[in-house]
Length: 360
Image (cartoon, rainbow, N blue to C red; front, side, top):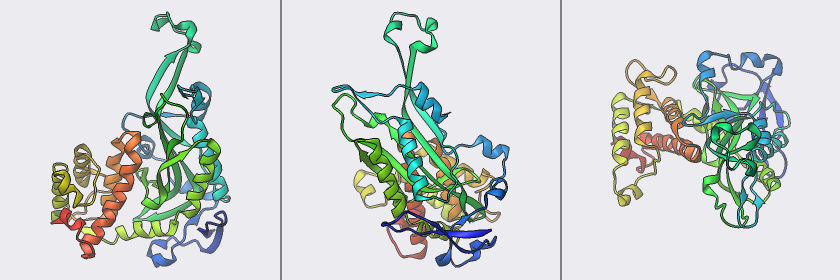
């Protein structure tokens, strides 16, 4: 079996090339020479062991519902801009555009079927059923679409291990129609796209700023594929992995963690002027409650016996708590979790005073 790396050049598509033999001790390698492993398809059943715990978890929970791509393309109507009746880019078109871009960017990757979560169902009925009681409506007389949709597409064979957790390369995005003005003429539509990794222990997403495009505006679905492809080309996979690896090297004592939890609770009540002097933290009180609880109770990321906890675990406590976010704020908070924990590293090392407030 061979290990591969991704050649991140803007002028050409990403190619997976052999660099070294597979090494189960890759976490101990110098992180400057770290490479992403592309696993042989014949042993993929050993990569992510199925478990009841894994099957219960999703990459986002909150009030979302799991659906298939076929449901979005066959059963859902497509909203339009009311002033000119021009259609919006359908959810399934967004997913298919990203699928196509991913296959071009990673020609040797084997991607799984998309995992799709939707929320805020919008129901309707056909004109012929306008006067029917709800209980008498037939299936063909009902219409529906979803205001918000999030999806991920994981590579089966591009993986890495950090902190004893196996990560899979993942791409995905969010479309939230509540952020569009559908009462106007057709204009550029807003999408959110990301590229990062998913932790297979907890199915948490690991996204950094470089792999996230919040304001992806396009007029046509073909532009979606082009822009998604460009982001994949520019995404620095090695840098992201190195940053996550560094999280495992830094620890908080029980006192420091308790101080951090107390400070983040105070942060919610600071004045606007005071918040401007401190790095942004966009998690809510309920999510901090979850983080504090999981510090003691989470099977994979709880504190050690002496109360200490490394920042890789803290980061995953944040991304685990983020699963309670609505679809339209989910990715921003995920990126914020990454930036925050990177900032805590700087505070511990004394290289930045901005984040020191959270530990003081």
